[in-house]
Image (tube, rainbow, N blue to C red):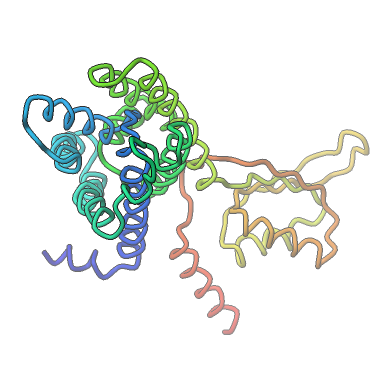
Length: 317
């Protein structure tokens, strides 16, 4: 219990709780306003819940989509705790618990039926393809946000994360594979055309998740060649609080001795470094490439802040 109170006091906990809440609100909007009215069966437990709800209705059992969704997600949650870990499981529990109530809340404040102005209309945007695009963009953004903090929106994100953990395949590929299986259940309640739309949406979901994930995790790998590396090294380790490596190199054209500095920086940090080099008129050849994944020790913002404060104290002394 004491450990729990310590966790609740941390800024990291509340930051991640806010991110999870925003991510799940985006998910609820995507499902309630774009998936439920159009009855699209895109690869997710939301789509599976629609199938189950409609099949039960056909035999006289009326269960709301949100209730079916909660039931399916709880089953998958048990698997998450066992195969992925407590942190992922706990965050996914929160996501699962709030999704149904958020959908009910949206139904209470502004039912999707208000958007259906014509008799027989089943699309908020007026076309199933537009609904599909809106759903995929919103859901993929929410998934990428939660995957970044070792969480998920629940449902099929759980088997996707399991496959990702044990096979190291791209998370978007894992989302697509899990989604295709569920999309095929739509054959029980929908014509072939609607199933194909769902399968295309599932494929798009995987692609967009990968895009958002890469964008959120993007780093810059920089290579700087100069004859005087010390000012740059000092700026990287003291001001940016990042690591770097320095190598002695020889110019192939001039045969002159130079030094090569390599480092991984965030986008803002790279901009600050370039500004420093320009302001101090440092003669250097610089190249940079985008990197979507960095493994190993990567200083957190809180740790970097602590190191900066220590550097300032040493400087003042």
